[in-house]
Length: 335
Image (tube, rainbow, N blue to C red; front, top):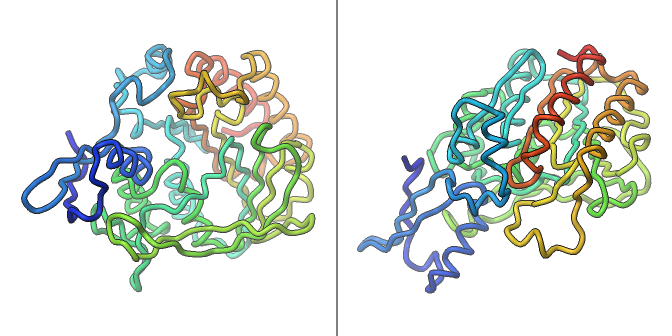
């Protein structure tokens, strides 16, 4: 069943089918948009993709069989399960919901929050949320989105307003003193770099051209961490160096360990890709857990999200990596 139907004026989309497809894929990202010409304009029908080619990984069916629940590809975006502090999900967009639920339980925090972001991507895109006087509005549903109201966040994820590459942006806007520590491997991160988080806005280009959407710019600074700062590094020591007091939220996208596909149908032709062996992935899992233990941070983890990222992290590694992670968190007494 389609999730959303949107009508656009004819001048909003290019003239050729190939150009329209590229424009819609770039704009909606996680969702597929089927377009039909009507007398009133372009009719867009949005839905979660179910095409095997769209998800890139040729062994994905085996991974879904391990995950269980009789899952189809079109169901992956909505699938998640929680055990204590740990949320396991396929799409990492649900990280924002997990944080929103934590905020509801804990109350709004005055102390700066630290986000430990373990990922091969920054996830700092501009979500499809429009800035209005009353707050952020989801243009697909017309509803307001407030991080203090988890149901509104869940609705915006289901509609596609908040996606895999943009879930961190609204959190930083809502909590500008948040410090982000981003652990990322080469080739995307080759050394330690620090930035100031600058909260900005950018104009929408499709649904309401000129409407403003929350965005983030990273402004390089000298070696400096703390509230409102963003550090990206491949080094575990630099990642956890000098973290101050306050609650810690841990987000692990498994594509940090191996991003063979990177959502790219041409992945075989890429010259540089993050594609280590399973043994190396498991070693990295242990090293991450040891670093958290050594820095004495495990007890401060308020919320943990593990995302398996179909079409990025190879599905044939899901089960073994999950077992190693569960064992690591058990050793850290994170449950």
